[in-house]
Length: 124
Image (cartoon, rainbow, N blue to C red; front, top):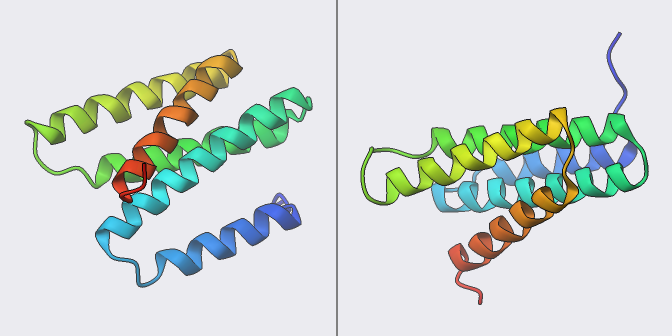
């Protein structure tokens, strides 16, 4: 049996899919950052509210965004190496929190990626 999406999750999915269609590479990276930041925020909120299902789905969404970002990195040195390290560390943090949730570490990760996302878009 297929799990039903909540109205908020369904809207978010449609909005995300619509924005991905026709987006250029830089926009896709920004969307992945946005998606990751939102998923991490939802995971913390769900943890506070005791909603383990939503927390789990949010961590899965965060991993999907990280995977997409990792797939977009080309090369092995310089900036590519730094990005690969950043994304791998983020993946480990999210996976660790799937086993033993650490709201403080997830909030720090969320804050870091929100800041990077703003910098990528040229906002300070």
